[in-house]
Amino acid sequence: MNPLRILECKEPGCHKIAAGAPRITEYLDDACRAHFEEVKQLFGVLGIPYVEDPFIVRGLDYYTRTAVEIHSGRLGGAQHQVLGGGRYDGLAEQLDGPHVPGVGFGLGIERLLLVLDAEGLQVPTAARGDGLDVFVAAVGERPAREAFRLLDRIRIAGLRAVGETSDRGLRAQMKQADRLGARFAVILGEQELAAQRAGVRDMQAGTQQDVPLPQVIEHLAGASRNGA
Image (cartoon, rainbow, N blue to C red):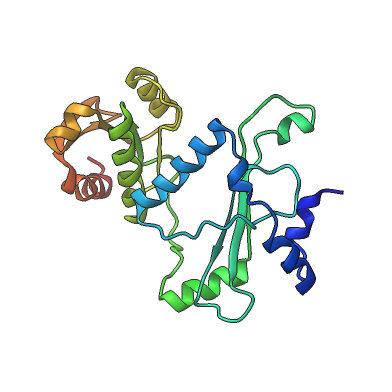
């Protein structure tokens, strides 16, 4: 039996035992601790409030490293969890596949719709063409963090966007943007960040413009609407 199951137990006696149990965060190795700190830093970059809870245990034993739950005060009562998931980097290997990093989650559609309604948000229903609008490329640690923040803002603006996650060089990132069929690539490096500008490349026309960072979203939205 997995001793972590006691953390899932809802009985009051279990809670007393769990309260005195060692915290899992006290036993992380250096790699896992660094990964966990980076996850929390990225929450900070995006302005997402979080609570560090050492007692979160997902119901499936193939989770590795970070587990996460999203709760909403809009739901009220005990049933306020909207989403739960985490990393499971070893799952493919357990199924006789190659080592493939993995992340996933489960969510309650009804609860999500209730939260959207309470927040006054609507799910877009207009049909859109296929393809990716924007690929965000970054070279360097500081540009990568700014790119992560910019990627979030681009998505909030309604554009389909992905970013670099593997710390590759710019040439490799541009090849990836082309393979994904991105309409535009936004490029951030140390020089661009120092000048508070970004390179915006039209992947079809092969042209590139320097755009002030505060105007990147407006520029991309306008170019997407105009097909320029």
